[in-house]
Image (cartoon, rainbow, N blue to C red; front, side):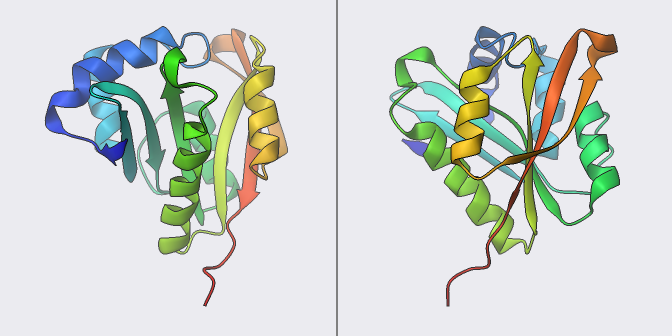
Length: 164
């Protein structure tokens, strides 16, 4: 069910992304295509058609996201989860955990010390906050974004070294 991004996924991923608003911002196809160029690890959940995705980034990009810039000012030794979205029919099946485990594995392979993410506080997303807490994330900051329209919790989780 998890696979790498394919060239023909863009349109479906934009629809999936925009269906998750306000948890993630509405994004045009052009903006989404640019985001994908930043992807260090991009995985697609496929149950016969694209039904979710994970987009991660490494440090050192010219990405203008307020949250990515906040994390970049904090550290240069991280792996960043820009967004994760699952179609409603796939939520609650453990796929979010599998995607995050893949992000932790990729961070470990790159030698990153921390995995970063953010979750909306306004508008509230309590389910995502609880999920991140279960995955080992702790709040390291909070900031308004989108000219104050959104407030996010900035989260970090340690990346444990690979078992020998």
